[in-house]
Amino acid sequence: MKGSTIPSDRSATIHRNNVLLSLLLVLISSFTITDAFVSPTSYSPRGITTATTTTTKRQMALDPVTYLRTEWVSAALVTNQTPRSADKVLELGCEDGRIVNFVPRTVREIITSSAENPDSPEGGGLTVSCSRQLKQQAERRGAGALMTYSDQRADDLSETPSSSIDIVVSLQSAQRMKENGLDWKKSVLEAGRVLKPGGRFLFCEAADVGGESYLDFVNSLSDFSIENKGGDEDEEGSEVTETVDIVEEEDSDDVDSPPAKSPIFQEVGYDQVDMVLQPHIAGVAIKAMDADMTPAQKAQKKAQEESERLGEMTLNAFEGRSKRRRKKKKKTTDTDGM
Image (tube, rainbow, N blue to C red; front, side, top):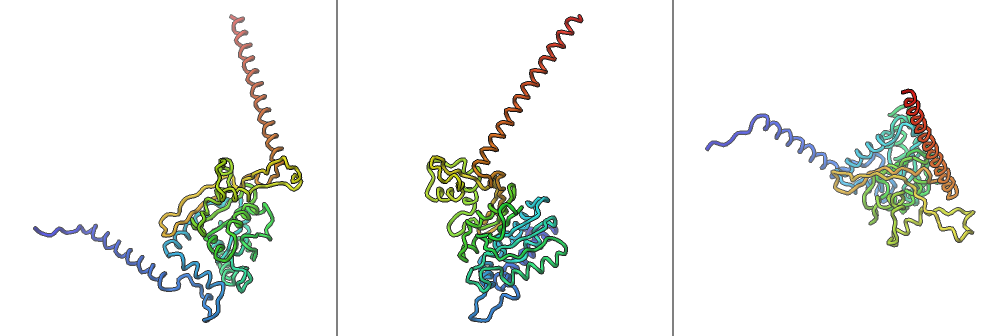
């Protein structure tokens, strides 16, 4: 029996796929063998350690597939989830200049924060490489957002007032905070503090940071999680809940009043980052509109909403009775006319 022949179009398809596979293997090999993520200034003589080499080690810890995929997801997340009304964007743990290209041109100001080790040559501030990349990207992009270079710690945004930021971004920075001795959980709480009511916290992070779930912690600060907490909380869950308890100083003497649990985020939307070798999570958390209110203000708002609801019900009932009277009167008039 004669051997079967492959059609020309199928042969061309197989050849094209083989070429693409070869190119992909070459690309992965180049990332693995060479210092593909090393910036030109990251070289240091033997025996001297710089903050840039620490960043390089962290980047090289991510495999090329995960790095490229999370980079793409991060760009799409920031670009698509930043509304036109957003003026100020703050990045947690800034380490390069990509945020400049990720944010829409409608953003007016970009504020940085650092996740570097306090013992680094920069004293825990932004590295020289990071500042240089931010400046270069801003110049290449041309007229756009104002760059505010801040060395504030990502877990202590002391230079940023409360309720002053429209968007807070955290892109693969939690693990670096963990390695450099910063508290990544506190950075999420700080993000909630500086966000305006209705502001958005955008994150693309490793699913597991130091043995703890990043998503579980963000969810624990949401309205849904706090409302559905029962009496069977474990010790870790109760500890997380205590971080969002707000007790006013003027009411501290009142022993009878229990601490009010105030959710930071009203909604949390998320999804798994697919096509990666190391699990990552990406999502959006929206700050609750009443997150910055005191218990007294919340009670006043609730009473006002209840009053408005009762007023609307009364008005609807009055209009309904008036409509029925008009119909009855019209029916009586028609009957008399006959």
